[in-house]
Length: 175
Image (cartoon, rainbow, N blue to C red; front, side, top):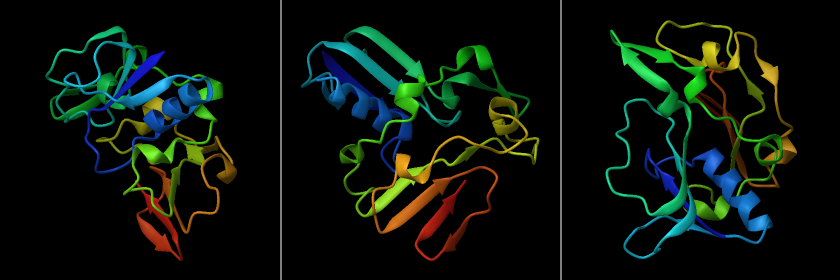
Protein backbone atom coordinates (compact mmCIF):
# COMPACT_ATOMS: atom_id res chain seq x y z
CA UNK A 1 0.00 0.00 0.00
CA UNK A 2 1.05 3.58 -0.61
CA UNK A 3 0.73 5.66 2.56
CA UNK A 4 0.97 9.46 2.64
CA UNK A 5 1.50 11.63 5.71
CA UNK A 6 0.61 15.28 6.22
CA UNK A 7 1.80 17.13 9.31
CA UNK A 8 -0.77 19.94 9.31
CA UNK A 9 1.06 21.92 12.01
CA UNK A 10 4.31 21.89 10.02
CA UNK A 11 7.67 20.35 10.73
CA UNK A 12 8.84 22.45 13.69
CA UNK A 13 8.18 19.71 16.25
CA UNK A 14 7.90 15.98 15.52
CA UNK A 15 4.36 14.69 15.20
CA UNK A 16 4.47 11.55 17.36
CA UNK A 17 1.28 9.93 16.00
CA UNK A 18 2.57 10.27 12.43
CA UNK A 19 5.89 8.72 13.46
CA UNK A 20 4.04 5.79 15.01
CA UNK A 21 1.75 5.34 12.00
CA UNK A 22 4.79 5.38 9.72
CA UNK A 23 6.57 2.75 11.83
CA UNK A 24 3.50 0.50 11.86
CA UNK A 25 2.92 0.74 8.10
CA UNK A 26 6.60 0.19 7.29
CA UNK A 27 6.63 -2.84 9.62
CA UNK A 28 3.72 -4.20 7.55
CA UNK A 29 5.57 -3.67 4.25
CA UNK A 30 3.80 -0.51 3.12
CA UNK A 31 5.48 2.41 1.35
CA UNK A 32 5.34 5.56 3.51
CA UNK A 33 6.22 9.12 2.48
CA UNK A 34 5.33 12.73 3.12
CA UNK A 35 2.33 13.51 0.94
CA UNK A 36 3.00 15.82 -1.97
CA UNK A 37 0.34 15.73 -4.70
CA UNK A 38 2.85 16.94 -7.31
CA UNK A 39 5.12 13.92 -6.86
CA UNK A 40 3.28 11.13 -5.03
CA UNK A 41 0.38 10.41 -7.29
CA UNK A 42 -2.67 8.76 -5.81
CA UNK A 43 -2.20 7.14 -2.39
CA UNK A 44 -4.11 4.32 -0.76
CA UNK A 45 -4.31 6.15 2.59
CA UNK A 46 -3.32 9.67 3.60
CA UNK A 47 -3.09 10.46 7.31
CA UNK A 48 -3.50 14.12 8.25
CA UNK A 49 -2.57 14.97 11.83
CA UNK A 50 -3.21 18.29 13.53
CA UNK A 51 -2.34 19.02 17.15
CA UNK A 52 -3.27 22.69 17.46
CA UNK A 53 -6.71 24.24 17.00
CA UNK A 54 -5.25 27.45 15.54
CA UNK A 55 -3.50 25.71 12.63
CA UNK A 56 -5.34 26.03 9.32
CA UNK A 57 -6.29 22.77 7.62
CA UNK A 58 -4.47 21.47 4.53
CA UNK A 59 -5.62 23.77 1.70
CA UNK A 60 -5.02 21.47 -1.28
CA UNK A 61 -6.87 18.48 -2.73
CA UNK A 62 -5.78 15.10 -1.40
CA UNK A 63 -5.74 12.21 -3.86
CA UNK A 64 -6.27 9.02 -1.89
CA UNK A 65 -8.71 6.16 -1.54
CA UNK A 66 -8.97 6.96 2.16
CA UNK A 67 -8.21 10.14 4.11
CA UNK A 68 -7.86 9.98 7.89
CA UNK A 69 -7.89 13.28 9.78
CA UNK A 70 -6.96 12.98 13.44
CA UNK A 71 -5.41 14.74 16.37
CA UNK A 72 -6.63 17.18 18.97
CA UNK A 73 -6.61 20.03 16.47
CA UNK A 74 -9.46 18.43 14.55
CA UNK A 75 -11.48 17.81 17.73
CA UNK A 76 -11.21 21.33 19.16
CA UNK A 77 -13.47 24.24 18.35
CA UNK A 78 -12.88 27.75 19.65
CA UNK A 79 -16.01 29.18 21.28
CA UNK A 80 -15.84 32.57 23.02
CA UNK A 81 -12.01 32.36 23.03
CA UNK A 82 -12.11 28.98 24.80
CA UNK A 83 -11.13 25.59 23.47
CA UNK A 84 -14.07 23.18 23.42
CA UNK A 85 -13.03 19.57 22.94
CA UNK A 86 -15.39 17.22 21.08
CA UNK A 87 -14.44 13.64 21.98
CA UNK A 88 -16.59 12.26 19.17
CA UNK A 89 -14.40 14.09 16.63
CA UNK A 90 -11.15 12.61 17.96
CA UNK A 91 -9.61 9.32 16.85
CA UNK A 92 -7.20 7.46 19.13
CA UNK A 93 -4.49 5.26 17.68
CA UNK A 94 -5.12 1.52 18.02
CA UNK A 95 -3.15 -0.06 20.88
CA UNK A 96 -0.61 -1.77 18.61
CA UNK A 97 0.19 1.53 16.89
CA UNK A 98 0.18 3.64 20.07
CA UNK A 99 2.81 1.35 21.58
CA UNK A 100 5.13 0.93 18.58
CA UNK A 101 8.61 2.52 18.49
CA UNK A 102 8.32 5.78 16.46
CA UNK A 103 9.83 6.20 13.01
CA UNK A 104 12.29 8.99 13.80
CA UNK A 105 13.50 9.05 10.18
CA UNK A 106 10.52 11.30 9.33
CA UNK A 107 12.14 14.20 11.20
CA UNK A 108 15.91 13.59 10.91
CA UNK A 109 16.97 17.09 11.95
CA UNK A 110 14.59 17.32 14.92
CA UNK A 111 15.20 13.82 16.21
CA UNK A 112 18.96 13.58 15.84
CA UNK A 113 20.12 12.19 19.20
CA UNK A 114 16.66 12.99 20.67
CA UNK A 115 13.73 10.78 21.63
CA UNK A 116 10.18 12.14 21.99
CA UNK A 117 7.26 10.61 23.81
CA UNK A 118 4.71 10.38 26.59
CA UNK A 119 5.05 8.41 29.80
CA UNK A 120 1.76 9.67 31.22
CA UNK A 121 -1.47 11.20 29.99
CA UNK A 122 -3.93 13.44 31.77
CA UNK A 123 -3.53 16.56 33.86
CA UNK A 124 -5.00 17.47 37.26
CA UNK A 125 -4.69 21.25 36.78
CA UNK A 126 -7.93 21.73 34.80
CA UNK A 127 -6.82 25.11 33.39
CA UNK A 128 -9.76 26.85 31.75
CA UNK A 129 -7.84 27.46 28.50
CA UNK A 130 -6.77 23.82 28.11
CA UNK A 131 -8.63 20.71 26.90
CA UNK A 132 -6.20 18.06 28.21
CA UNK A 133 -8.17 17.30 31.38
CA UNK A 134 -11.34 16.76 29.36
CA UNK A 135 -9.59 14.69 26.69
CA UNK A 136 -7.22 12.59 28.76
CA UNK A 137 -8.62 12.82 32.28
CA UNK A 138 -7.92 14.94 35.35
CA UNK A 139 -5.56 12.38 36.82
CA UNK A 140 -2.12 11.72 35.40
CA UNK A 141 -1.78 8.03 34.57
CA UNK A 142 1.10 5.99 33.17
CA UNK A 143 0.58 5.04 29.52
CA UNK A 144 4.01 3.92 28.31
CA UNK A 145 7.46 2.79 29.31
CA UNK A 146 10.52 4.78 28.31
CA UNK A 147 11.67 1.90 26.09
CA UNK A 148 8.68 2.52 23.80
CA UNK A 149 10.32 5.66 22.39
CA UNK A 150 13.91 5.79 23.71
CA UNK A 151 16.70 3.61 22.41
CA UNK A 152 19.81 5.27 23.83
CA UNK A 153 19.45 8.72 22.29
CA UNK A 154 21.42 11.44 24.08
CA UNK A 155 18.32 13.56 24.83
CA UNK A 156 14.76 12.73 25.81
CA UNK A 157 11.83 15.13 25.36
CA UNK A 158 8.85 14.19 27.51
CA UNK A 159 5.63 15.70 26.18
CA UNK A 160 3.52 16.09 29.29
CA UNK A 161 0.89 18.73 30.01
CA UNK A 162 1.27 18.20 33.75
CA UNK A 163 4.96 19.11 33.90
CA UNK A 164 6.41 22.60 33.83
CA UNK A 165 8.92 23.17 31.02
CA UNK A 166 12.27 22.28 32.52
CA UNK A 167 15.57 20.75 31.65
CA UNK A 168 17.05 18.15 33.92
CA UNK A 169 20.37 16.90 32.59
CA UNK A 170 19.59 15.75 29.08
CA UNK A 171 15.91 15.11 29.76
CA UNK A 172 13.63 17.87 28.54
CA UNK A 173 10.04 18.30 29.61
CA UNK A 174 7.84 19.93 26.99
CA UNK A 175 4.22 20.96 27.41
